[in-house]
Amino acid sequence: MTIVEGDVVLRDFRFASCDVLPELRLHYRTLGTLLRDDAGVATNAVLILHGTGGSGAQFIRPEFSERLFAAGGLLDASKYYLVLPDGIGHGASSKPSDGLRARFPAYGYRDMIEAQRRLLTEGLGVDHLRLVMGTSMGGMHSWLWGQMHPDFMDALMPLASLPGQISGRNRVWRRVVIDVIRHDPAWHGGDYTDPPPLSLRVATQMIWLMSSNPVLRQAQMPTLAEADALLDTPETLAKASVDVNDLLYQIEASRDYDPAPGLERIRAPLVAVNFADDLINPPELGILEREIARVPRGRAVLVDASDATSGHGTHTVAAVWEHELAALLKDSSRA
Image 1: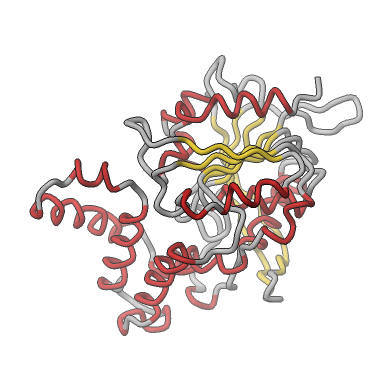
Image 2: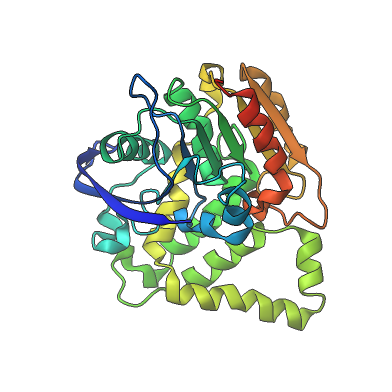
């Protein structure tokens, strides 16, 4: 598989806050070749959207790319044009740590989607999508894509997400991360010289706590000493790779997420896949099962916990849910 990387610069990008950034850089990866029909409309483009704190690079992992993008895979790169963008504030796209720090515009999910749309249309010449799919935050973006641009895609597949406003425990863990950064004296309003160690430790540990299931965590650390040792590992790694301002903006961006009022506007076939052991989107809430009835061509799938699942992060393990993708592609085919 050949991966092409590049950047598109969007001039005078206006955020929902009315702030304007003279140049917004969107980084992307593509695989495959874009095809068009006789009318010149793109026919094989697939937009794949990453989660909070991630980037398009996460989909190059073997458990995703070798399962889906390889020859014979459901999203075989010899047949599809795969677009893996880095969202605003993530990866190699424009973000607070580039220099503006806390003066970077306060972006939300709708800003991120508008930037994705312009990346496709202005940068890559993609005027229609065969499929929009995403994991976690990318799944939430998929719900919004379907209602903000209902005729832009043939199908939608949000993974590990809920079609409702961030609330309950999902809001609590995000607020813990936000508050520990904003109330850390070492943060200095975003103008710190050295990374604030307390903020980084607590924020990273909270995210790590929510990312897997209790059974797996217990097996990984069955004693107090093993729990402490493992808990320190992601915090240590984060010191070298995470900018606290970037992390703060990434978590705060979910404040404008609320797809519920527009679910009826989604026209494309949609299959939402969640996991029974996902602490961030627990099935006990019943939100997905209730709201999917409002999506005209929507279907909800709950994957039972098993040795193959690992909580929220199962969204990137394609072997667990690829049969649902196969059914969606078949049901939404124009052939």
